Length: 215
Image 1 (tube, rainbow, N blue to C red):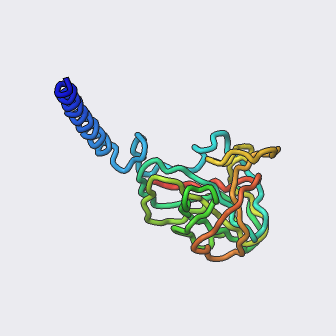
Image 2 (image 1 turned 90 degrees about the horizontal axis):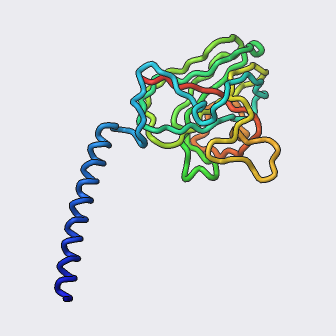
């Protein structure tokens, strides 16, 4: 009796091994079909533009960014490897003469709960005293995960395209008892080159709407 039980156990174990191998083969084939994807996401078309709007929904808006002294950022979920060729921000109302803005791409550090980030790439100073879409070209491949899209302004008060400030911060929700949702990140920083690392705090303010162009 004990031998039969042992034999049945062996047979079950063998069947389980076969099933696991089949599942593994299917998973490998599926992964190859969507190479570079963390989730089954269609491959983005060259020239298409992406932003963190997909994480918030709703509409874009126009808001005035305060003067220098803060980096403003918002998180974006990258679902699959995505080569990019440019990042863009729109100035809808010109600032004072000589005002400029700098964009940056930062990676989320750790599990994101502290809003710590490491710099990946940044733009040079871009004139914000003339309206229009401002473009910074770069060659980079985003990997699945979370990145922060950021900007900092020199001075003055140009109006830029932002995500409307009535959405909860992606992946963070709203603080207990808070009347307004936290939908952006900010941190004190003098205008100039971005630091290698920075830790943000949540804010109820808006966040800049920055797009990527797929290469």
